[in-house]
Amino acid sequence: MYLARPLLTLLLLLTAPIVVALESDQDQPIELAADSVDIDEGKGLSIYRGDVDLRQGSIRLRADVVTVHQVGRKPSKVVAEGRPVRFEQMADKGPVKGEARRVEYEIGSENLVLAGDAVLLQGKDSMRSDRIVYDRVRSVVKAGAAADGKQRVRISIQAPSQ
Image 1: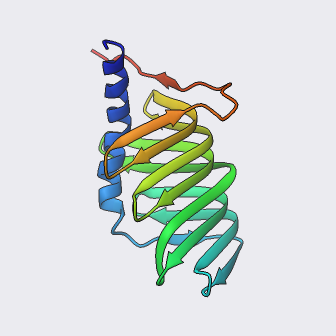
Image 2 (image 1 turned 60 degrees about the vertical axis):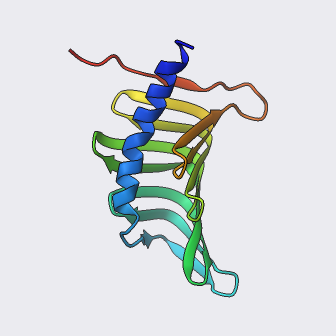
């Protein structure tokens, strides 16, 4: 039980600032720049390819391909793929940075999924796993190994400076 408390503390420290930043960013418009875009209004899909740069408030995401799914002209899901996808967001305690081969955000359920060599960094603290899932509504973070079971979750917590 003693070991679980520091782990829970780290997870809350890593994700709590993300929640605060997302709260203020979600009302901002989404801006996208890319080398090309294919828009299929019938299917509700917009696919941005080539050096994609997505910005919303303090959020910046860079990827090779970003697919925006829409329902009734409103975004419902954003999927970013790259080698890797990189993102940064300002939070109260400084920038939160991350990367993964695939990042998905379900707007309705407010679930954020980082998959494939996923990394979250804030200052000198870090979390690494093949998959990291953050449920914003319930404030729950889950991280787990790859399907082959060869990769473990790795967390690094720096001691507070005196």
